[in-house]
Amino acid sequence: MSATYYGMRMAAALGALLLVGGVGARAEDAAKDHGPIAWTESLDAAKKTAAKEKKVIFVDFWAPWCGPCKQMLKTTYQDKQVVERSKQFVPVLINFDKEPGIVKKYNIGAIPVVLFLDANGNVIKKGAFMDAKTMLKTMDEVSKKKRG
Image (cartoon, rainbow, N blue to C red; front, top):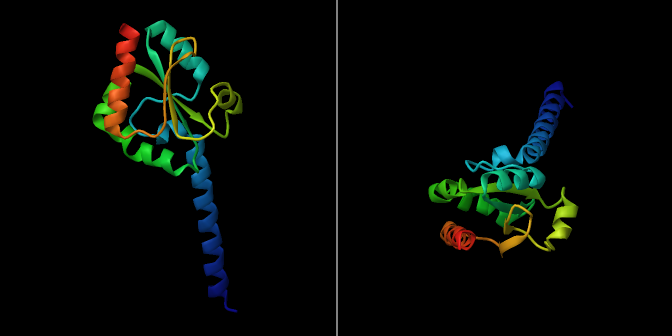
């Protein structure tokens, strides 16, 4: 076997490692990678912010391996109206695999799941996969409940 062959194999192996490393890094920076919504990844911090700003918490349970979650991130959470409306809430991303205590507390069996919570963490509304139109309707319903 030639040196060129081994060089190509090494380059391919290095490329694969970089690709895998990049995917891992992306999962770690979930909130930054989930588009224009100002996500946080701490439910405790979100509760404090919600209490202080008198806002509802908007929680998305997701995982990097979840196809429908990725679809919502590419479509629903990129929609300009959804992004704008999200500013009325405290948006939180919860990684299904990394937060088993929160997953258990809210009885999340499958994802994606969207919860709207009050500042104490009580569920106002629960939903599953939502397109932008459904998300906007749900956000409006939650806002009306909060006011009413």
